[in-house]
Length: 232
Image 1: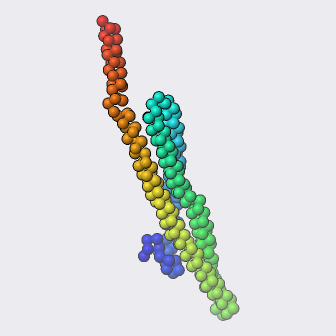
Image 2: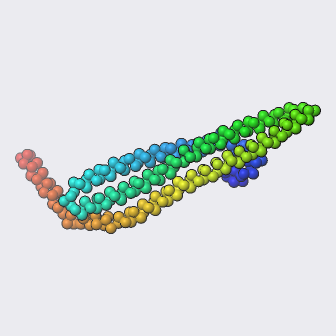
Image 3: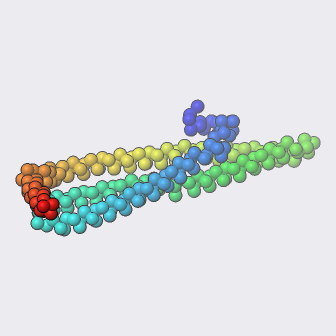
């Protein structure tokens, strides 16, 4: 049998189907939706932190205008990371759209399904209690039971279909958004590779490091002279 329940089980109203529609079986879906909400909130906080970081990076770039090459690299990094944040915002909207689209419709279908199930039990009880000596009443009760049972089967199929397809489609949409995010991110960072090499050539060459080393050496000598003078 399919792990998400075969449709024939719905029509037959089998014990497996009854177990599938029980509150205990539905709770994992609700749990997934709650975790989805927490993930969306965490993603929004991550995007806000990224925006603050990029704002700080833009401000740092304005203080290094003397180093035109480094400033240009920082600006390109900022633009690239801004696009990454935009990509992440899109991927964050993917799970966010699951709850408003999926939960209300599923909840409404389940309410209707439960109501029809109660009507079916009532119709079955009336059909069992009606006197067989009253042919007209017995026929009406039998027809009502058959009609209610068909309606119940229809709602059972609809409910099962929604649980199967909507859950699968939502997960597929999220995974596809992840795939798109990392694919676009890879292309974007690959485009920034020349800028990264230019930046590395500016900040990691001996010519760029030697002034700092010389400054630290001079500062160390001054401190040594200062402290030696105080000791004497």
